[in-house]
Image 1 (spheres, one colour):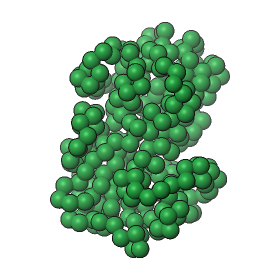
Image 2 (spheres, helix red, strand yellow):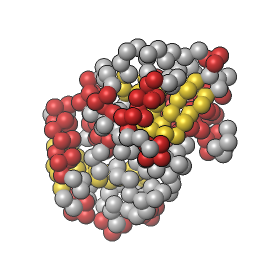
Image 3 (cartoon, helix red, strand yellow):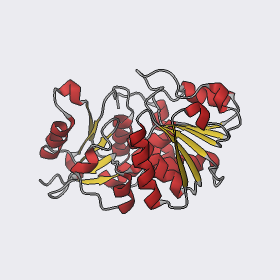
Length: 287
């Protein structure tokens, strides 16, 4: 396998995930390619639509001319066992969202982690996170949790409808951030009491999964909220948070920065971030 890139021939990328019809990742990478005079083809690959399981779609990408892929819900943890992960932090995270096909073994990275930190700093600057409630401990939740550790979070409350997932994340975090106090709660409403930050890392709120993981009355007293969902950008969770007076961090910002960081892995050519942001906000998917 030698999926190296010849910029003159274009760049083949893809996204594997469920419910990704409205993903803006194809547009982001096509626009990044256009800035550099490179034709980028970026495919949406939904296993059920292809009549294949995730592993079969992954193998197909590996065999064909894909330079790399992004991986999204619900496969970020699943793909971690199929790639070589050199970064010990990402290895401890156990979740991968970017894969490069080069050499004999695909290499895995996580740009959700760094993307979340960029998004947080954009809105909150150097303000401490305070005590944080995070609902959802799947692939993106694991990345955000490690991002919180890097931001200096001292107390993290985890809620998941599958407590074993929360427990697994807590164990991974304890090794990487031994000074962080981590607790597991069964009810988000109770865990929200006294929290400074509120985070949704479940698919609730995205197109096809309407609703909110935390009702507005339980947001009182918090300072900020982040929603990993970005389609739509104005989720009920963030709308309620804004109406409750919280500073809101959109999942769109994580999407934007994780995409920029993924581009560096796909093809490390310079990007005009301000122009890319403007084009993404003002351009349809036909580019």
